[in-house]
Amino acid sequence: MSTEHTRLRPSGEWSPDGVELACAFVRARTGVEGEVALVNRSASRRRRRPRTAEESQWSGAGPGARDPISAGSVLDGLVSSGGWGPQLSAHAVTGRWEEIAGPAVAQHSHVESFIDGVLTVRCDSTAWATQLRMLVPTLMSRLAEEAGEGVVRSVQVKGPDAPSWVRGPRRVKGRGPRDTYG
Image (tube, rainbow, N blue to C red):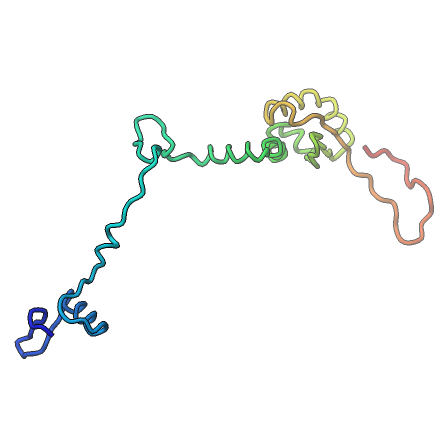
């Protein structure tokens, strides 16, 4: 070892630090004597690729392609590209039924399904089903405001489900008790 790369402690021991320790390690591993280059200078001088016209432009005062985009505009683009607008509008109708129909009507009815533009509403009594059938034109205009024109094409109002009178494996044929359901 050469003496210019070593430091001696006052006690006479060798005390390498930093670059000297790294050079000593490289010399010991490779067997090379003399100066050792620790950094490959040719690797750090790689050629940069030329910038494209879009990359070389700087942002100005107006909006640019590199500006951040709001999450709402990204989701709007995703919904429009996927063609999910009508479905989301329909689900918004079912989720906000109380706001659209009003609290009194919503207390006695609920949205049962929405298939191919037909909104099916189930009422808890025949009287409320009759009342809601009379309100269908008003309800259609309100749905056009909320969901968009043409999303809901018709509203089908149903009364309560009739109970099943079928009990057990042996039963008597017939209509069961006479009453009106819906």
